[in-house]
Structure formats: C-alpha cells, structure tokens
Amino acid sequence: MWIRLLCVAAFALLGFAADASAASVKVGVVGPYTGSSAPFGISMREGVQLAAEEINAAGGIKGLGPMELVAEDDEGKPDVAVAAMTKVVQRDRVAAVIGPINSSNCLASMRVTQKERVPQITPVCASPAITAQGNPYIFRTTLSDSRYASSLAEFAVKTAKLSRFAILHDADDYGTDGATVFERKLRELGVTPVVREKWNRGDKDFTAQLLKVKEAKVGGLLTWGLAAEIALIARQARQLGITAPLLGGTGLATPRFPELGGQAVEGTLVTMLFVPDLPDPRAQAFVRKYEARFGRRPDTFAAQAYDTAYLLARALASGGVDGPKLRDAIAKAHYEGITGPVVFDETGDRVRGLLVTVIRSGKFVPWQ
Image (cartoon, rainbow, N blue to C red):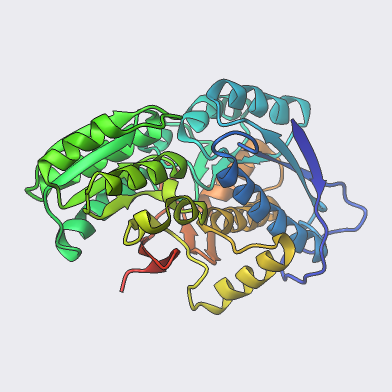
C-alpha cells in the first residue's frame, strides 16, 4: 500500500525558495501504517508531512521544487520492509528515504538503499547494529539504544536510587539490544540484575515471567519493547502485587502507552527526545501546528520525523539529488531542530543528550 503526497500548506520558511517551474523532488516515507506498530509509523508520517507542507508553502527546495512524499506501508515486517524500500527506490526513484521505525525492518531494508546509493534517515530505529554495519548511506535522528538504555540504567541507579533490577524484553532485535545494553551498564555500575526474561511480539500472558520477578522482590523492572505488550505487563504485574516502578525506552514513548496501561503505568520512567510540554517556543509552535493539522498532540516520533524532514530539505538544497553528493551533505549537516541540535558522527549516529521522563496523571513529563 502506497500513498503519494504532494504537500502544500500556508507557512513561510527562509532558505527553501525554489523556481516555480522546477519539478518536484521525491522522498520515500517507509514505515508501518498497519499492524501493531502503526501508531509509531503514523506519527512519523505525519511529522514528515507537516514539515513538507511548510517547506512547500515557502516555495519548496531551492533548485529542486516541492517535496513530494511517497509513503509505503511496511506493516512492521522485515520482508515487507525490503519490498517497500525496493518499490520507492527502484519504481519511484526517490532521492532519499525517511524511515522505517522498527529496527528489524531497518536492518533488513537498508541494504537496498546502500546498494542503490540512496541516503536513508530513520527518525526512530534505535538498534546499535544499524550504524555498526559500515553503511555510509544510513543515518538516524533518534539516538542509539546503546545511548538510551545506558543512560536510563545510570539514571535509575544514580538519580532514582533504584536497586535489584529485573529485565523483561521483547525477543526481537529492538528488545534484545536494549536489554543487553541496560544490563551491561548495570554491571559496570556494580549492580547485577536478578531476573532476565523475554517475550514474543503479540504475547498476551506474562504470568510465568512476572512470577519470577515477584519472587525476586525487585526494586526496578526494565521493560524493553513496544507499548501494547508492556501495558499488559504493567497491568498483570500490579495484579500480582508487584509494585516496583517500570522503566523503558522509546517503544513506550507514545500517548497510547498510558492510555492502555492506565493507573498501572503511573511512575514509569521512559527515555525520549521530546515531550509536548517542553517550554521552548519553537517546540510549542510545532505542538500547536500539529494539533491544528492532525487533531491530537504530537509524540516524540512525530517531532523527530519533523526535524528529519527539515534536515533532509536543507541537505537537498545544498547537495542535490545525486546519491553520493546528497549523502555527504547529510553527513555534514547541522540543524537546530525542535528536538535539539541534529549532528551526526562518522557512523551516522546523532550526537546529543536525552530526556528521562516520568508518567504522571497519564502524561509524560520531564523528571524533576
């Protein structure tokens, strides 16, 4: 399933004026728009769409024309992601691709863009393996799980003063990588987790894993995976009398998580790059525009995708659509976005700090 969007809106932006006669420049937006990961993919697509509409309203990309988005659904499945990436690259001849959002899908599909020398920027995929392949055409505007999980472990021990950790994680690449990094950092801090268990995507009953957690009398429960399963884990944990606070990565950084988890997820610590309540004026302007356009508050994935689209537009304006030249322009980019400065290291990883948030009254708020 694909959607072509020629984005136009009434917003002025300096630096993107283009010749009205220029053809459009195509950008692929590959992500899960159906399936269990769809809320994340839709947020990404909407963030890109809002940015493209603003860029096009200001005249498009200098020398190239308006940004035309070609969205392709990868259904959250690696094999479908490869097919989706092949379609936008070979059929639609996009200049660059934004997405996907699942790490397994990114690892599978980035071989396509590398072979075709088409730059790819993922706003969400966090597996450390993605930028460890020596692929010069892959970048990410989120942070690696090695940063998210390591920082969360240090925060949990040093700031939140938690001890006796259990680790529960999805068995996929995202869950396994995050849990492994978290455990490694704990051990560096002199803390040994007392339980480590996994689940498979789509599981509904976590009683066996949680009984081990209850028996261990833990003080902190890391849950590395996606919101649907972890909301169930939280509810089942509370039903079993487990009161330890939950901790998690960006798989939980969606309003859907507190909606699904309710009171059971109050006090959960979650790492991310953006929350709608940040006081920064640019962030608040983005929140207002996003709410007006899509009828709901943006999450961190929408914000990260919004910044990604603007960064790509700047790189296209300076590097053009030639793959290697555009790749070099992205690598050299320095964009001050609503999620902070976007700068890449030599592997394509973003370099910046992150937020640790806590769920209070159903909202993510920065830890105070």
